[in-house]
Image (tube, rainbow over all chains, first blue to last red; front, side, top):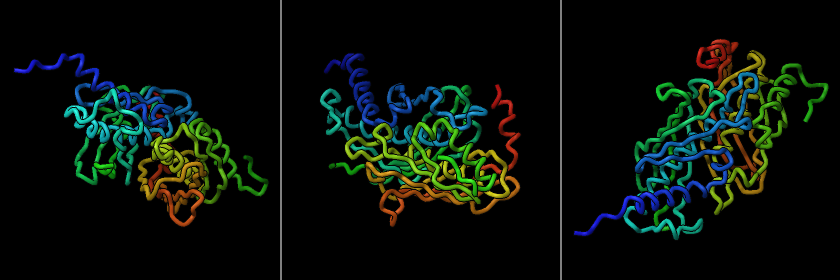
Length: 167
Length: 156
């Protein structure tokens, strides 16, 4: 019987793939969004900073930032699921992945955000759930919260155009 | 950009409010026109906002921020609304990628206001004014906003 790969090798391969995927999007870096991985599950973090403020009187996070954070989380979740399959099946070696050979990102068709509470001047977290992912279209739901996981401050649903597989 | 003397007081206050938003300033947004429930805001292309480096196209999230700001501006400049508002929901449809290097211009109309809700539509274009880059539709608060800002969550 073949010995299983050492856990560090597997972890490093997955983390390299995720790191390169996230680093490929300048806007995600500019907003300061980071992604944490547990197995294939992703949690996005948006650290608070003054440039994210929409209402200086409260102060509250800009509604556009909330939308951007949710959309970035949804897009990354979809892209990560595609990349995960490629990396796990060894069709892609993350160490050799360059911006040119990286799988293309899904494109947003529409995105609807429900604003449930003001975004406080604190870090925010988000997780996305792919409701349906077909060959061409995908539907994704995404939620964001701050101090309490049960108290969402916004939620969104969106449709995405998946990248053509042979591109 | 400062308003001229002919601008009505409500539009002037709305202008001051919009121009003081830190995130909008950070994105280089410029208020081109405001008043009577209508607002025009533009945003320059910027490499920091790119979503796909292979094409240089701006991330949808930055377009969302522009749309949200423009819709909010239209709401607070409308006749019957309070001076502050918050987004209840906003839907954005992306028609085509914005051309890299070109300014994106959003136009929002607050087309109906009730005692508690303002309804808004918006369109965004780049230099090609025939086909929109994106359209938006949303609902915003139009009550005094006390119950939102004074909630225990907001101050805790």
